[in-house]
Length: 215
Image (tube, rainbow, N blue to C red; front, side, top):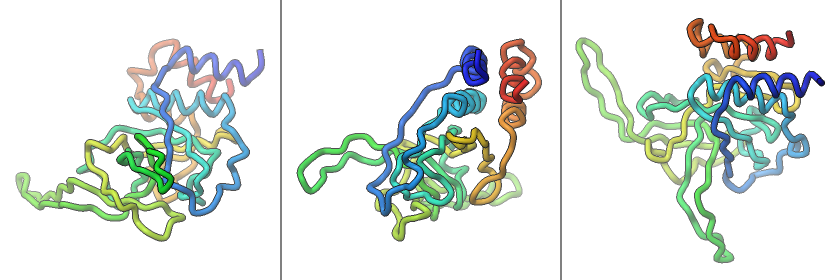
């Protein structure tokens, strides 16, 4: 059995997650990485991480709107989040309303992967001795787009915050909690961090970690 089949088989047997697809906005420029589809190992890693954050994973379409941080070969792992916990700089996945193209064609439910650039409808209030600011909507924009998205994101349209990015060609994993581009981590370490010792105690999860480490 090849290493590819071993990794996919072990991880997929240990973990399952919902597979989502995103359909971002029309491109400012075509993504030059569009010709590189994700490898089965990368999809298995994304699926394992999605299960560990109790979220989902999705591919990035070749619009080029998030270059150079995200390209068409990337898979994003999405963690559910309260919109009031979002901060400027976070990359999120959200749905946008249906709309009609100039030719009359109706575009139904679409999902976009863009960055939060502004917090909207914010209210400050005190909890115990601390002042807390809660914002009910956010404005987003692609890193490679000159203008912000015209639709604000609400809790109802928010799928979640991008927690990890998996390179579909190299299997490299980035933790997106630090910096605009994220920090490279090993898939096994990310899985350990998210699952914790209790959930990792079972033999299936232990096998999954060993597979991700190449053992």
